[in-house]
Length: 251
Image (cartoon, rainbow, N blue to C red; front, side, top):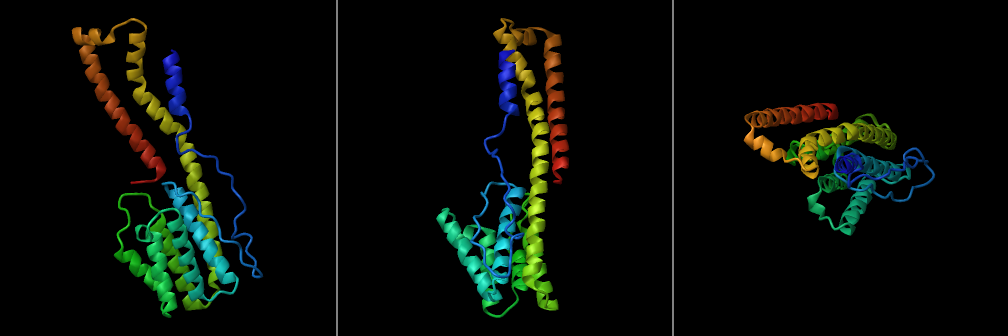
């Protein structure tokens, strides 16, 4: 019984990547035309869609703040590109390894040459192969950035206002994704516990002095029950994984 309780606590406890998240007021909500906010610290680059949405929200917020402060578009793109490359180098990540840096460089060069950053971003999205089969939010976010830039080019509306609204929307999406992952943490832990429970039962039987392995091998009924149990165990694992995948919204 003690082994079962310890195993349940280990499986249901917070994972190694779990961390408390204290949300500060959005920098986009504090934007004012009279000043330029300090360079925002990028969120921790943990894997997952929520972390990518947070990273993109910080990027869009910083670009909007540069434009609000009166920077020309070309200079704003250039400063944003330089800042993120310096951050990547400080973290030990090569500039060519991250799609976000590639797209920033493309947009910065297009703006510097007097071209359209929106068209340059779309061409780069079409040419560059992003991670296939993952829940990466980066291509979708960059497509929305390109739409904002293109709308500003065609209509003349302030790009900073569009980017501020986009940053807030990305933050809300990141919060929703984080809440969904938190809600799924319990079912995932339950699935893991139920998957290992039969094997924990065998270990508990050995600790109590019963030899379940001998009973299974000698008795035909025991062997048949093990085969049927393994089949049902495999079906249950596949079914549970399919339910969790459907709840996560992935195909």
